[in-house]
Image 1 (cartoon, rainbow, N blue to C red):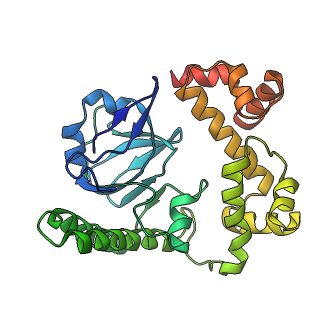
Image 2 (cartoon, helix red, strand yellow; image 1 turned 90 degrees about the vertical axis):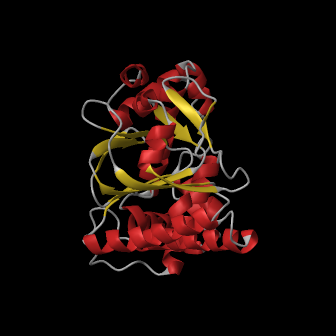
Length: 302
């Protein structure tokens, strides 16, 4: 992975580029490879990616960050950072790069096949980004990633077109395994809702990503999607435990945090970008959802 710096401190935009196979939207490497490739200061900076970053930890410990939330890493930890998320790579308590034995998979959004279950994993803005796997699941994921790594290494010598397709489908297999994992905190005893019951939430996800800067009320989303507000809220609660309005506010808050940390835009400009009519309205909203003013949050990220 070669990362292209295009943003401003303290958050840096990272664009996907495979230095050894520039025409391939996938790279499989170890965390040690990543440490050797990046200067140490990169592990102290926040990065916003335009690609997917999956890490499976086999040995070692550290702490990473996903969208401003610390994520402890230890054997069996699986992390999945999606495009647009802000991450900090795992470090020790002293801020040094963590000495993890881990498999890392980087891929562009258009590389894996677009299957309904894989799309739930790759496109869900509220989907979990960290799991602590059981020993059995860790072993299954480790074997799946080892197969992916072996085919990736064989690409220069094996039939390129067939191997490329095989890589796409092996990656889809990894994503399907992630889709099958219980949500963090779930004891696994629950049953997944039928596909028809999940459809309102899936459509809401996509509409929210397109419209969260202009639509702020849950009933507007329900009307646009052709559902009653009751149906939409039921689907959102089933998928996330929260109402549609809560998810709308959470998405706006997350974007506000990203803009405050990633850019030096004035609060007034962020207000306009997020669809608020006045900075005072944005300030009240941000305080209500985070307990901090935008200025205090920006200072803490600096």
